[in-house]
Image (cartoon, rainbow, N blue to C red; front, side, top):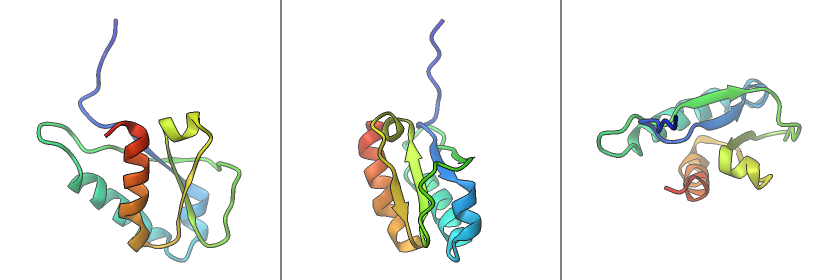
Length: 97
C-alpha cells in the first residue's frame, strides 16, 4: 500500500545548533512561520523536525536540511532569521516544490 501525505516534506533542523546559536530561537520561529506561509491551498504546512547532530557544528549558524538534500549530502546553514526565506527556497528546490 502506498500512502501520500497531505503535507509537504519535513524540514530537518539540528537541535544542538539551535541551542548553541545566539539567534537559535529567532531562527526556529522564523522557520515555522515561513513554512506556514508557504503552504499551498488545501495542504498542511511542512513540519519542522528537530534532529540530533548532523556532525557539522558551525560556530554561528544552524544546520537545516530536507530529505532530498540529505540524499545529496548537502546542508543549508542559517545564521539569522533574515536568511530563513532563502534557505527554505534552496530546500524547496530540492524537495521539488
